[in-house]
Image (tube, rainbow, N blue to C red; front, side, top):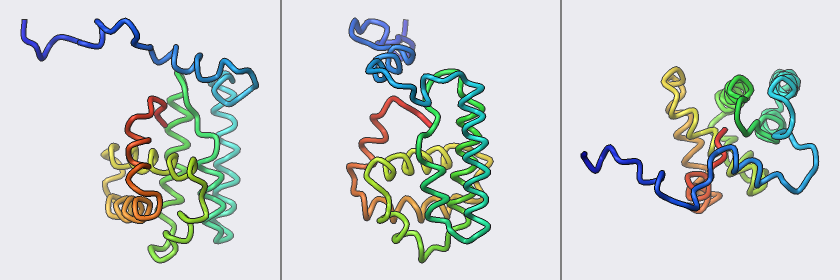
Length: 162
């Protein structure tokens, strides 16, 4: 048996499954978006889409981005909501002028900057967004300048994907 075909994580006794990660991180109570049904999460993302598009039409991209990245859908069985929310974020990022990027990034909190970096990496990972790769690289550059390299490390090591 080749060493490359062995799943070494299967031998780790302290390994958490994705389900256990979400149960552990939200065991404190409260009715967060992660504890709702997948249908309710998708409906809340659809409401978010309407609000973000309305703000984009008014030319308020900063608030549209804030709405799009706040309370992202995490968890299992939320692929439709994750895809729709990623599409909303990509639409907002594509509509912002390059000169406005630093001002918008500076207005975000540290947690929002980390979430934005997750969506930038998700956009780079999807082949259908290849037309916006240059835009995503601009956002990545400005976000890294402002938030620092720690933002990249936090996003890469975070088990919650958007």
